[in-house]
Image (cartoon, rainbow, N blue to C red):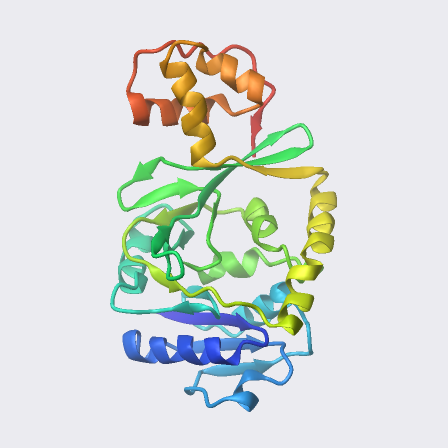
Length: 291
């Protein structure tokens, strides 16, 4: 029913650990690995067997590697994983496979457990455009077992057909994450139950030079493509701070939305979830538009 797809680059120990966890906690599921590192991971370390191991040209990029790997998938569902993730008994794969066909979603993201911080990380953002700025808000609208959103972690289960129709932009060797979800034509959600372990790895000098040091240049390529000047991530802490002003009666939600260039609909959802109905929430005019 499903296939794991893993893009890896110069992290053989992390790939080995992930593949071992799949063999233990999700045995029998085919795995496709796309590797554009040097040397290839299977040359540097013993790896569990996989369905298909793609040896790509050095530094082909995340986008190209994922596109090629998905081409090899023969099952109706695909699970995308980063190589620094780990499955344990709390993994959500089985639940997600049962839940996705019963929902109206095409792609269902997973929660991460950040082992270095000992906490869950729930990426579920919604996109809004304000002039030449792309704003990303934390989503809180829950439907059954998922929260609706526009973007989740780069670890998810999806209908293979939808991934084949929505390809990663191969001009973006990095910074492909938000670009992919901004262009994705299907319905996205984040599964609320279960998690994958994300074990942060301190990058080697070589890995940092190839990934982190080039991120800014690829981000500009992605921004220019869509006509954006910048991306603003609206954090829950910021929302709670402005909601306290509203709850204290100093300003209305409409005032805050226009003053801080925030999305009124999102503020209303958070206000109701936090304080319930009661304070003034007059809309007023807004030039903010959804994606």
